[in-house]
Image (tube, rainbow, N blue to C red):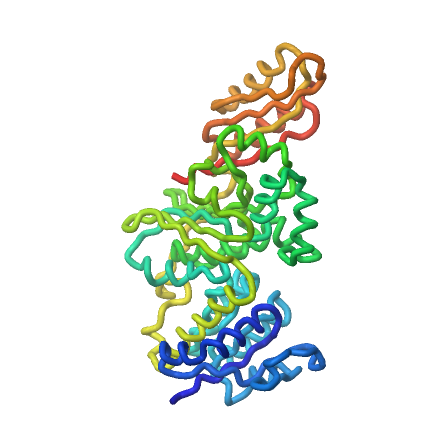
Length: 437
């Protein structure tokens, strides 16, 4: 029986999980693929580190080029992450005509267009299911199962760390910092959590999903609006709950007549919506399209074996397609390369959402009239107002306002004028509301 020869670059959490799944389920995988998937060599930084049972079946090396340039390796699996040296390794592997499987969303978001071009020129494949949402086969579903659909929108919780923090703040009635500390202790957040809590990880994933959804080249990450969850307080979560919402870290892609919206930010979601009930470290992506309607893709967004499951699925797909003509393979972004359309990215200033506003206001007559006057001047309609506190002896009271859908440019202008009012103390916390219609 034919053996497909695999070389791994990296043997961390996902690398070890990939070896474990391939080893444990070797017979089942062979039955499905019609060939065996064999890890021949693994490149690591530290050869002296213990790798348990893997050392009895796999050759370890500290020279990645002994895999990338080797004639006895068919598929290079890049699992080291980041841009450097991963970019150089993947480019060289493709230039050598080797197929590549990667879980590296940052690499694809930043360099994907050029890497896909290089792969096409080399008649090689790049498979990257594991780069987005761990074990959830969202890329395969959108590229293959939804080929007969025009996608209207995609809204997802695609960073488990941020979701874990917001879920914990609500359930445990604690602060952002307390939940971040817990997430770090449990290994859900890195020592430097910036990529997760500032939305950068979700931004990289959304860049990939948006291109697959709408058949466009990968957008520049610098042009996509991105906000983190660091400004969310327990008070915001409590007030949102009273109003019938849950706060979630969302990635949003929408098609409109003006082009494509791509944005990452926390948002209030109705508690009755399915995405509002995606909790903890779990991921969920809701796709809305013309033929199938709305579908929710839910599951583990990270972790050793969930992500390894996606890596192995890519290895299986590549092994099946190796003997096929490049023209008959599934296109990298789901659309034929020469048929990608360069839809305009809608500037965030031109997008519209409803909004949650929380401000601290001086407790005196006429303050709310001042606030509503400014909002009215910008054509911003108010859905509801909550004034918290007893109102008897407190000098400063929190005021919560829900607006109807408003142009981003107008809400930002209104916020500047509101924060300039002597009766408004400090900054106003604004969170978008995503309708998920």
